[in-house]
Image 1 (spheres, rainbow, N blue to C red):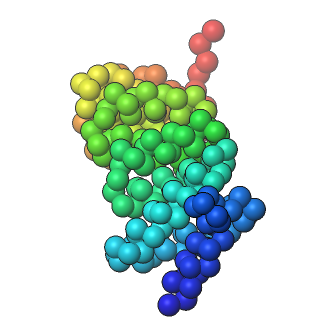
Image 2 (cartoon, rainbow, N blue to C red):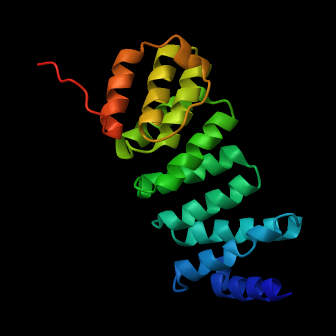
Length: 196
């Protein structure tokens, strides 16, 4: 009941004459209220209402990446992956420095078996966030699915260098370990001989 009242209050604040939305209502307040619906997403009405309000928020704030990120999150929760990725990419055009959005984009690419997209998105994300192990893992999976196992191994190794544990992975069995072992030793502080 309380959330229903919040929704009604938000809708009144979002919509003004001729169906346009109120740009004066703080974006953070809109985000807070819409996020309050996430625990109720088992209820179709709550999902539909959050979807509508998030859409209105994105339309009302076309230059605010937070609005598109929120709408993408709602679509992701509804498993509307193609729509979610399009909205997330709008958020990235406005601000490509939000790591969580990149990870969601890659998660959708892999879930939807769009491995070429995952490789491109992974490479773009890693250019900005080169120390994020999950980005290497997603990109490694995409390369493996495209049968480029050398690249998959390289990205998997980079994920390990960033701190991800790789346990009993068949990629390791055939890989040349010399470079990797040396890089890993340097990373964890083990002295290694330096060859001039």
